[in-house]
Image (cartoon, rainbow, N blue to C red; front, side, top):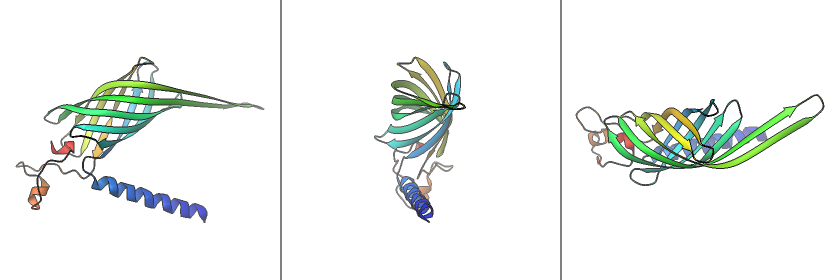
Length: 187
């Protein structure tokens, strides 16, 4: 019974968090595949885009590399500096915390290894698309470990309305203000 109550509370919290995110202008979530060219390891990642200024975002993120069981997570600062057509170019700087856990079990013994390190990364990227769902390509360079990674995926912006043909947004059809919010889908 206790586990059902816990699951119910977690579901309620997640629904509330989703509704809150959906109500905020310019917020987004993303997922991506990742490839480390130096170690030749693939991985997956997730991020949340939090609008900070007109073209700036704070981005908490996590990544997981499959073969080595390395986790990485951190906080990124991103600034969109150029837009042309469906392409929005941005610069990104991150502070990353990496950790790996290895557990091995033999016939009569068990051992585990843990390692942690801090890293800084710099990169650039591009969003591709005009609507609320945008494709993303982002190469990064890790300063301490001198590794190059490539992330490719998508970003979904909440409470975002794309422009209809004729240049009017959905908001102007409803008699609402057509003032541009932070959300890049309006650009």
